[in-house]
Image (cartoon, rainbow, N blue to C red; front, top):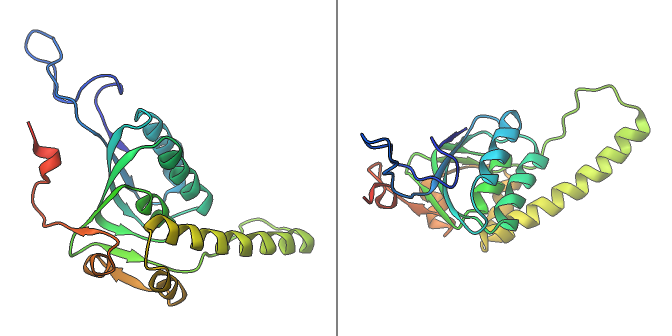
Length: 196
Protein backbone atom coordinates (compact mmCIF):
# COMPACT_ATOMS: atom_id res chain seq x y z
CA UNK A 1 0.00 0.00 0.00
CA UNK A 2 2.13 2.84 -1.22
CA UNK A 3 1.92 5.71 -3.56
CA UNK A 4 4.70 5.88 -6.06
CA UNK A 5 4.32 6.04 -9.78
CA UNK A 6 7.97 5.42 -10.61
CA UNK A 7 10.82 3.20 -9.48
CA UNK A 8 12.84 4.49 -6.50
CA UNK A 9 15.48 6.08 -8.74
CA UNK A 10 12.96 8.33 -10.50
CA UNK A 11 11.26 11.43 -9.20
CA UNK A 12 7.65 12.17 -8.25
CA UNK A 13 6.02 14.89 -10.33
CA UNK A 14 4.98 13.65 -13.76
CA UNK A 15 6.28 13.50 -17.28
CA UNK A 16 6.18 16.78 -19.15
CA UNK A 17 4.65 17.25 -22.60
CA UNK A 18 7.93 16.26 -24.26
CA UNK A 19 7.87 12.93 -22.47
CA UNK A 20 10.81 13.97 -20.31
CA UNK A 21 10.40 13.34 -16.64
CA UNK A 22 10.26 16.74 -14.93
CA UNK A 23 9.26 15.40 -11.54
CA UNK A 24 10.81 16.74 -8.37
CA UNK A 25 12.44 14.39 -5.96
CA UNK A 26 10.40 13.75 -2.85
CA UNK A 27 9.96 11.17 -0.16
CA UNK A 28 8.20 7.94 -0.94
CA UNK A 29 4.75 7.83 0.63
CA UNK A 30 3.64 4.53 2.15
CA UNK A 31 0.20 3.79 3.61
CA UNK A 32 -0.11 1.25 6.40
CA UNK A 33 -3.85 0.69 6.35
CA UNK A 34 -5.69 -2.24 7.86
CA UNK A 35 -4.13 -5.34 9.37
CA UNK A 36 -0.32 -5.36 9.05
CA UNK A 37 -0.25 -9.09 8.44
CA UNK A 38 -2.55 -8.87 5.41
CA UNK A 39 -0.19 -6.41 3.69
CA UNK A 40 3.22 -7.54 4.96
CA UNK A 41 4.68 -8.49 1.56
CA UNK A 42 3.67 -5.18 -0.05
CA UNK A 43 4.83 -3.10 2.93
CA UNK A 44 8.17 -4.93 2.99
CA UNK A 45 8.59 -4.34 -0.74
CA UNK A 46 7.80 -0.63 -0.34
CA UNK A 47 10.28 -0.19 2.50
CA UNK A 48 12.93 -1.95 0.42
CA UNK A 49 12.16 0.63 -2.28
CA UNK A 50 13.50 3.37 0.00
CA UNK A 51 17.25 3.71 -0.40
CA UNK A 52 19.27 2.90 2.73
CA UNK A 53 19.48 6.15 4.68
CA UNK A 54 16.67 7.59 2.54
CA UNK A 55 13.45 9.30 3.57
CA UNK A 56 9.81 8.38 3.39
CA UNK A 57 6.47 9.36 4.87
CA UNK A 58 4.35 6.56 6.34
CA UNK A 59 0.62 7.12 6.88
CA UNK A 60 -0.95 4.94 9.57
CA UNK A 61 -4.54 3.76 9.92
CA UNK A 62 -4.06 0.27 11.32
CA UNK A 63 -5.47 -1.80 14.17
CA UNK A 64 -2.22 -3.83 14.26
CA UNK A 65 -1.58 -7.43 13.33
CA UNK A 66 1.13 -10.00 13.90
CA UNK A 67 3.92 -8.99 16.31
CA UNK A 68 6.37 -10.75 13.97
CA UNK A 69 5.24 -8.57 11.06
CA UNK A 70 5.56 -5.47 13.25
CA UNK A 71 9.09 -6.50 14.26
CA UNK A 72 10.07 -7.16 10.66
CA UNK A 73 8.89 -3.72 9.49
CA UNK A 74 10.56 -2.06 12.47
CA UNK A 75 13.81 -3.93 11.77
CA UNK A 76 13.75 -2.79 8.13
CA UNK A 77 13.32 0.83 9.20
CA UNK A 78 16.15 0.63 11.72
CA UNK A 79 18.62 -1.63 9.88
CA UNK A 80 18.31 0.37 6.65
CA UNK A 81 18.61 3.70 8.50
CA UNK A 82 15.39 4.98 6.94
CA UNK A 83 14.48 8.49 8.06
CA UNK A 84 10.71 8.04 8.18
CA UNK A 85 8.05 10.55 9.13
CA UNK A 86 4.95 8.88 10.56
CA UNK A 87 1.55 10.51 10.11
CA UNK A 88 -1.38 8.92 11.96
CA UNK A 89 -4.47 9.71 9.92
CA UNK A 90 -6.78 7.48 11.94
CA UNK A 91 -5.79 4.59 14.20
CA UNK A 92 -2.36 3.26 15.10
CA UNK A 93 -2.86 0.42 17.53
CA UNK A 94 -1.39 -2.79 18.87
CA UNK A 95 1.41 -4.12 16.64
CA UNK A 96 1.32 -0.98 14.44
CA UNK A 97 2.83 0.91 17.40
CA UNK A 98 6.30 -0.59 16.78
CA UNK A 99 6.85 0.73 13.22
CA UNK A 100 5.25 4.02 14.31
CA UNK A 101 7.69 4.33 17.23
CA UNK A 102 10.62 3.49 14.90
CA UNK A 103 9.93 6.59 12.80
CA UNK A 104 12.27 9.55 13.30
CA UNK A 105 9.36 12.01 13.37
CA UNK A 106 5.84 11.17 14.55
CA UNK A 107 2.92 13.41 13.56
CA UNK A 108 -0.60 12.98 14.95
CA UNK A 109 -3.85 14.92 14.79
CA UNK A 110 -6.21 15.64 17.64
CA UNK A 111 -8.35 12.80 16.23
CA UNK A 112 -5.64 10.13 16.04
CA UNK A 113 -6.24 7.08 18.25
CA UNK A 114 -3.77 4.57 19.72
CA UNK A 115 -4.57 1.33 21.57
CA UNK A 116 -1.89 0.01 23.91
CA UNK A 117 -2.52 -3.51 25.23
CA UNK A 118 -0.71 -6.71 26.19
CA UNK A 119 -0.03 -8.99 23.24
CA UNK A 120 -2.80 -11.46 22.48
CA UNK A 121 -2.19 -15.10 21.73
CA UNK A 122 -4.36 -16.55 19.02
CA UNK A 123 -4.06 -19.95 17.44
CA UNK A 124 -6.30 -21.18 14.68
CA UNK A 125 -4.67 -24.61 14.59
CA UNK A 126 -5.16 -27.68 16.70
CA UNK A 127 -1.91 -28.17 18.58
CA UNK A 128 -0.75 -30.60 21.21
CA UNK A 129 -0.26 -29.80 24.87
CA UNK A 130 3.57 -29.73 24.68
CA UNK A 131 3.55 -27.41 21.69
CA UNK A 132 1.02 -25.16 23.41
CA UNK A 133 3.20 -25.04 26.54
CA UNK A 134 6.29 -24.13 24.49
CA UNK A 135 4.34 -21.50 22.56
CA UNK A 136 3.10 -20.05 25.85
CA UNK A 137 6.66 -19.81 27.20
CA UNK A 138 7.92 -18.23 23.98
CA UNK A 139 4.99 -15.83 23.85
CA UNK A 140 5.63 -14.63 27.41
CA UNK A 141 9.28 -13.90 26.55
CA UNK A 142 8.27 -12.19 23.31
CA UNK A 143 5.70 -10.01 25.08
CA UNK A 144 8.21 -8.83 27.70
CA UNK A 145 10.93 -8.16 25.13
CA UNK A 146 8.64 -6.25 22.77
CA UNK A 147 7.22 -4.09 25.58
CA UNK A 148 10.77 -3.10 26.58
CA UNK A 149 11.68 -2.49 22.94
CA UNK A 150 8.61 -0.29 22.40
CA UNK A 151 9.65 1.92 25.32
CA UNK A 152 13.21 2.03 23.93
CA UNK A 153 11.92 3.08 20.48
CA UNK A 154 9.91 5.91 22.00
CA UNK A 155 12.95 6.86 24.09
CA UNK A 156 11.00 7.92 27.15
CA UNK A 157 7.98 7.49 29.36
CA UNK A 158 8.48 3.77 30.07
CA UNK A 159 6.31 3.93 33.20
CA UNK A 160 3.46 5.65 31.37
CA UNK A 161 3.66 3.35 28.33
CA UNK A 162 3.70 0.23 30.52
CA UNK A 163 0.69 1.55 32.48
CA UNK A 164 -1.17 2.11 29.19
CA UNK A 165 -0.32 -1.44 28.08
CA UNK A 166 -1.53 -3.01 31.35
CA UNK A 167 -4.76 -0.95 31.25
CA UNK A 168 -5.59 -1.81 27.60
CA UNK A 169 -5.71 1.97 27.16
CA UNK A 170 -7.00 3.97 24.20
CA UNK A 171 -4.79 7.06 23.94
CA UNK A 172 -5.62 10.20 21.98
CA UNK A 173 -3.27 12.13 19.72
CA UNK A 174 -3.20 14.95 22.29
CA UNK A 175 -2.17 12.50 25.04
CA UNK A 176 0.66 11.20 22.85
CA UNK A 177 1.86 14.78 22.43
CA UNK A 178 1.57 15.50 26.16
CA UNK A 179 3.70 12.39 26.82
CA UNK A 180 6.35 13.71 24.41
CA UNK A 181 5.87 10.80 22.00
CA UNK A 182 4.58 12.72 18.96
CA UNK A 183 3.92 16.16 17.46
CA UNK A 184 0.41 17.52 17.00
CA UNK A 185 -0.41 18.81 13.51
CA UNK A 186 -3.58 20.53 12.30
CA UNK A 187 -5.58 19.07 9.44
CA UNK A 188 -3.99 21.23 6.76
CA UNK A 189 -1.24 20.63 4.18
CA UNK A 190 2.06 19.50 5.66
CA UNK A 191 4.86 21.85 4.66
CA UNK A 192 7.37 19.09 3.85
CA UNK A 193 4.90 17.58 1.36
CA UNK A 194 3.87 20.80 -0.38
CA UNK A 195 7.31 22.33 -1.07
CA UNK A 196 7.84 22.92 -4.78
